[in-house]
Image (tube, rainbow, N blue to C red):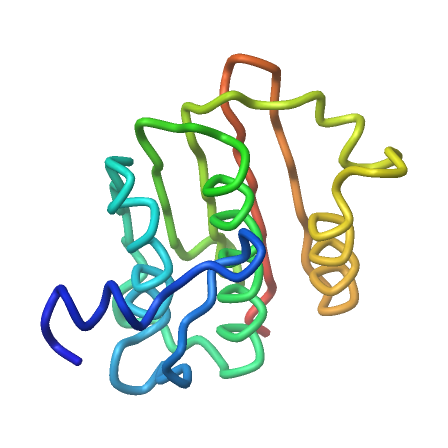
Length: 158
C-alpha cells in the first residue's frame, strides 16, 4: 500500500460500484481516510476532490463509521457512474449530538423525485436511506438536472 499506484489498483469499480479490495481500517486511516480511498477512480478520471473535515477529535463509533462509509460509497459510486462531474466536495462534520456527511458534485444531476419512486432508479439511494433511518439518522438528497447532486447523511452519536 502507501504508493499512489498501489492505491489505484486497490480501489476499483465492479458494475460501476466503487469497491476497495482492502479491508476497512478505521483505526489506522480514520473514516475520512477510508472514504478518501474510494475517490481514486474519480480522481483518475480528472474529477477534482475537495475535503472539509472539521470533525477532528470526535470519536465515531464503529457502527456509525461503517454506515457513513457505506453511504459515502453509494453517493460516490453514483457520482462515478452518472454525474460526469468535474468537481466533488466531501464534508464530514460534527453537528448537534451527531455527525454529518455531505457528498456534493457539480455533475449532470437528475430528477430527485425518481430516486424515491422510480421503478428503475434509485434503489441504492433508497436502501441507504432505510439503513440510515433505522439507525435514527436522516438522509437528504438534492439534485436538479444539469445542476449537480448533494447527498447529506446525518447520524446521531448519543
